[in-house]
Structure formats: C-alpha cells, structure tokens
Image (cartoon, rainbow, N blue to C red; front, side, top):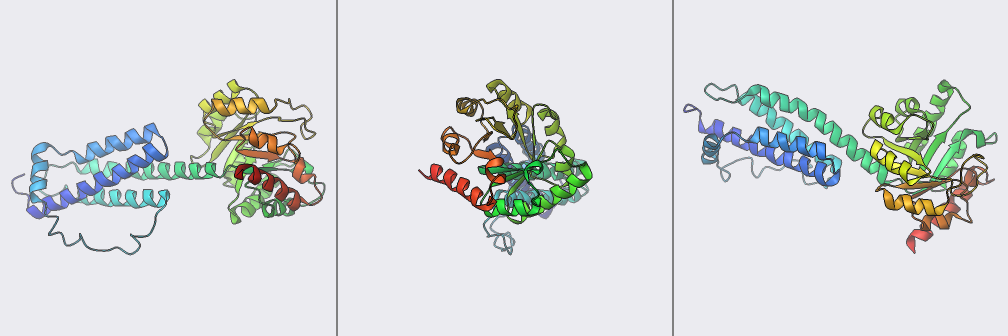
Length: 353
C-alpha cells in the first residue's frame, strides 16, 4: 500500500468513521428501542466487520486524518437540524451508511489498495434489508403504543340495518382508539370491500384498524393488525405470514394460554369473557381476577372483552386492562357516538385519577 495517496486515505478514513457511527446508531435503536437481540447482533457484527482494517492500515488512516482542514466539516445541510423521530433517525443513518459503503466500494478499486470491493457491496445490500426490518418493527411498536382506551368491534351481524360506514364514523367521532372488523356473514369479495372502507375511515383519523380472523383480508387491505381466536390460524403461523409492521393479537382464557401466545409472537392478548354476554352466548366467563393474573404474567398489552358496559367498565380498567373491547354496549345503542363517548370518558376518568 506504499503508493496510496494521502487524499485517498482521508476518503477511506472519513467513510469508515461515518459507517461506524451510523451503524452504532442503528445498533442502539435495535438494542434499546426494540429489544431485538438478533438485529442488534447483526448490526454489531457488521460494524466490526466493516470498520476493522488492521492495526497497520488503521494507523495510516489516522496519520492522514485532517479534521481541522476538512472543508466539509462546517457545511450545513438543509433540514439536518430538524427534530427527528425514531423512523427519521433510522432512515437518515441508513442512507449515510449506504452512501459511505458505495464510496468505499469504488475507492477499493484503486490500484495497490487491498480492500475487498465485494465486502462493501454485500454490506450495502444487506443494510437495505436491515433498514426495512428496523422501520417495520418500529412501526409495529408505534401501533402497539396506541392500543389503549376503547376498542370497538364492528360486528356486521349487530348493525341492525345501519351502514357500516356510518357506524364506524360515529364510533370514531365518539373517541374510540381501536376498531376491529368482525364478519361471519359476507363472502371474501364483499368483506374485502368492507374492510377497505373501514380502513380508509380509520386511517384518515389515525385510528388503529384490526381485522378479526382473516389473515388474507388483513394483508390485502394493509390493516394495522390481525386478531385470531383459539379456533383460528395459530398465532405462530400468523406471525410468520404477517409483515413485521403488523400487530397481532390472540385470545386467552388461562394464564398458560397467555404465556403460550406470548412465546408464539403475539403482541397483545384479548382476555374474556369478563362478564356474561349475549354477543357470544357460549363464551365462558373468566372474570376480572384472571385479567389481573395474566397482566402480571406477560409483558404486553391486555384487552378485556365480554359483557363490558357502562356500569362495569370501571372495574375492568381498575383490574389493569390496557384497552377495553365492546360490541353491544356501543352497537346496541340508539346514539352510537354518544355511547362511545360515554365509555371513552369513563376510561379517561379512571386513568386520570
């Protein structure tokens, strides 16, 4: 490497530093924001694999360094000082790393410079996939953080001739935080159109939209998530088929079932029935005590469901439910918006105390 110019060494040094810094930021996001062991290790291995160039060559790079004389050190980039959320941080640092890898890929072709061009190219393409995975998992985490408050299930069998669009709009105006579509009556073609309409209404108001049972419908309409019951697609299978940005819920009536759902990749657990309910006449009442036990056993949001209405919703919130799912308490009311708002206000009142 005796024929390598000082300018070339400076380019290599600057880009290796940029790659190391950017990868460390992404590594910290994976480790501390996502608690993702696999991604953290992958980014750490990538950082060490790319930035380590041998002691002798590293010394040459350091000796060629001229931070004070770098004309780009004081250059300002439009928008760079703006506040960033985690997604912005991931995108900015991934781009920074990818660009530097491309520079090294080209510089590695310089005669007498024994650097592996393919290593930088392969790392660049690997990072494209890692960036996507980080963004999807952060998006899933953001969605999961919204899983609280009133969770209204739009059961098509309970509409009593009212349009699902109007019912959904009233539920949203009433302040529901999550809407789930449940339908056992329509064919998949009709259900697809219904799900798209409800998704659009929810997306316009930044409300979580979850599809019950049907993985294909959830994926087809780009819903925020899927909920499956004990007789539906297994949670482990659903998690494999869902994209990483989708949240996944499962139903539990025992602590052991809740633990199994957690191990299989569920993001939240629906627990019920809390009380007797006419919506599912055969639903077993498990009671509020079980909700507390499951809440203590698993580290994830708990959605209480089953027979919950205005006169007992406080008990459910006090027992630790993160979200409260209702059907007839809202859909059975003459004024859906008013019924929704009353329940939302009760939940807020309990949380503010």
